[in-house]
Image (tube, rainbow, N blue to C red):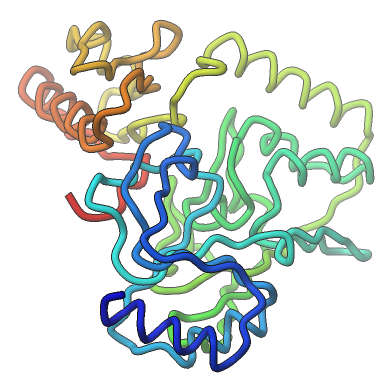
Length: 307
């Protein structure tokens, strides 16, 4: 064990931690690209209280990274240093009262959407088209088909990387396009959403429309990670895939990494040699779009770890 692993191992043992933890744990199965490096320390907490205890006890210079379903992440070959946290079943509760829907950060977006349909709660239909978790949605203002997380978000209960409880309330400054502007070094544990009762037949119809659009326009059952680049604002209203197409890069390939034939902003990974190749592919696309069209693309996929 190295120093960080020894420190965390002592904390886990001393506090009789019930959560699961492993050292030098390979993260390939935690990325939809099917490849990635190792976590120095991988930890699934058994409760909010246990997670808070571990964060409070650890050294401040030990980095903390949170991963969800891995549906929009590249984990570099060099792995992730420090403590890698994945929230599990204890963070997967959903409930509601008169005005609010409560969802743990580990709740899958699709599960939340179905729960709201069952309870005639409108406004969550778009989550049926997002293959992530509630925590991830709040971290990046996830959205699709004209709706975003900020539209239904009230607040999030979080822990800082040092274990302090923090409440993050919605505001005009909090969210921007595919970004949470104030979530730095915090772990979202639960999100509260605005509850509005609607007609379940209308909710169901919208969910069917979203899923049909997604199946028609996006690749299925391949190693991909959703939209690769954000749609830029300064591109004469062209979306990222249209810019890639206009630049003549739809058929570009790099050692088993290419764009989907269905959608020129969805990377498909067909190789198991290196996660870094996926990042290299995207960086080459960014470079060529800038050269050919003068527009700077920005990653929507999150890239973590060491090269």
